[in-house]
Length: 288
Length: 288
Image (tube, rainbow over all chains, first blue to last red; front, side, top):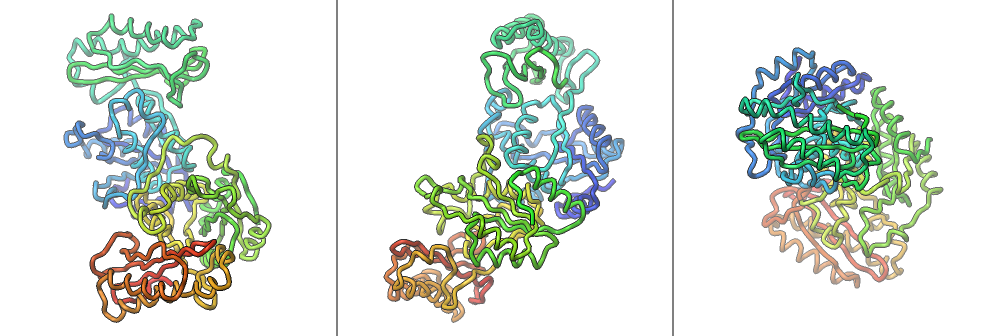
């Protein structure tokens, strides 16, 4: 396994792989890998000749009040995980490598960005699409892997790829869960034991909402209301939002007659948890 | 020679070429090809295994008051030119192919754009970098060819490639000129015979400015003044601008101690002509 910090070295390597007709699976991350990332690496390993993992805590996607400096890092552990999944190349650039000077141009995101978590993180998805555009040009992936835990990110990346005709296939990978259904997250360790017991109710509530659609409900307001009532009565966490939107367009719907996402964010004392479920107009799960 | 109108067909073809280890030379145009374009095709043909010409009158780079509908087109002539230079593939997309739906994200250009011709064409370079980002992802060129007649465009494309680490080499091709020095342009036919006789003075004036630097002048104001005086006394055309800026950064300089561009735009009765010269601190020509 090669660990490279220099853009040109990676481009030489990936150009070589492309010339040899090899497929490249790409897993972009900010490091501090957990089982969700492992699932991405596992999928990438299965489907491609070569696997690239990038680890870069992208300053551009952090807001002014967000703790860039305190974002957890553990390169040693990450490298072990990368080896475990037989990753061929780890790209580990420095800030100055990715942003050597102020940029002359900027990407702004006008759709899919100002709902769900994007509402409270202005500029976040601008940072995400900017670094991904760079990483795609550096790593030249055949397929790129993203977890559906961040379903909004997947939707924005889908738009990025379509808008600019990027020759990469987007792979949406199901959320990895604890045995009781709680979505895996590095933030889960910040829950009190009482909160930890309640947190699986987020997924339960989302499934209850989905069930309503399976049973014939077409009205998004009704679905949101039922989901909220269920969740409110089963956890002391404070609901940040429960939203139902078309997917991947992330636009409001007045009637459920297409693929939609039902998503929730809940504040606990020292952690904000998110989860979602994507299903079609009959309530059939699209991506776990 | 293949003529393709569909993005996917081009991507299949270029992916195949890339996999075979072939180099691809790319000449993006808005069609109505003249000798400037021919020089680009000629260079591309010399240096690459395969040559792609794209012809697309990009609506995004036209301002509200600019005549998109009246932009000249002549696909038959363009196809003959493409054949003459043994072009392998002509990409000739429709508007709806390039912009099938409103985009979810947009590129804005914050540097190099609001000087020279960009000053009077707000949004123009946004349109240019957007369509080029798409075309680069579709055509996957090894090298892309641009004429130095549009030196500002070359500078903006250079920034695009750097900012997003696009794996393409930018080739700057010298301006093609008439025997009397006038830069070739499809607009030259709109000059009266009197104007046509005066128009070569634009290049003369720029060379005079460059000569001053060769003779030791470091002061950009002095160079601009001399250039303006020379030109003013030799043509009845109305000078739009004469600017001297660092190149390719296109920033104002107080002293000439790096590569600079001296550029002019002149209004004639039914044509606005532009020209430029790029030279280093000793006045040595960098690109004709």
